[in-house]
Amino acid sequence: NAGVMQNPRHLVRRRGQEARLRCSPMKGHSHVYWYRQLPEEGLKFMVYLQKENIIDESGMPKERFSAEFPKEGPSILRIQQVVRGDSAAYFCASSPQGAAGNTIYFGEGSWLTVV
Amino acid sequence: AQSVTQLGSHVSVSEGALVLLRCNYSSSVPPYLFWYVQYPNQGLQLLLKYTSAATLVKGINGFEAEFKKSETSFHLTKPSAHMSDAAEYFCAVSERKTSYDKVIFGPGTSLSVIP
Image (cartoon, rainbow over all chains, first blue to last red; front, side):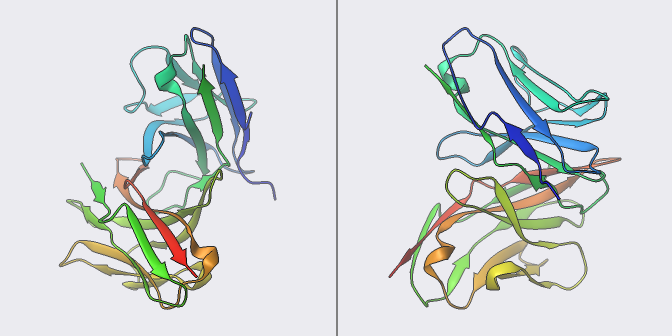
């Protein structure tokens, strides 16, 4: 029973390049969350998606960041024209449904380094 | 909006000693509360959660937490610390929306265990 799968685990990009982070939720889960963890900080909510829908993107920076969760395939977090401040660990989590109290299960994270 | 505070960004205990990690939340509605543990370079693993059943919640690895509404607290305890408990611990609250929950994390507490 595979858990939440994220790839790549580590990604290095030069300033101005694009970063694409992928997340496959647990089997049977249709709700995906993305969080960002900056060094020495906690997890900050970025976006919550269901299949083909963005439900809550209140934590997404207004520019350069986008997320999708297509009908087929993994969820993608895309960062365009990366800057040094984007260096962080990006965690994906999934849950079977968005109902109250459901546990969300985390992937191992994708560590982005911008040089 | 709901929020979480964790008193003490770093806690050190001796092996075999009591572990106490503090968490306070703010919420205008009955909350769902979680404790997650993060080992270096890994994702978050659920330790335990409170979903309005028993106020004393038992989790994995000998941890437990008690929900105290009057104090708006959900402190995590373990009677006897083990070296393998050294990790980052995050308290989280589930923020109710109309059709889903958004999980908000505290800043985390780093636990060190001294042999």
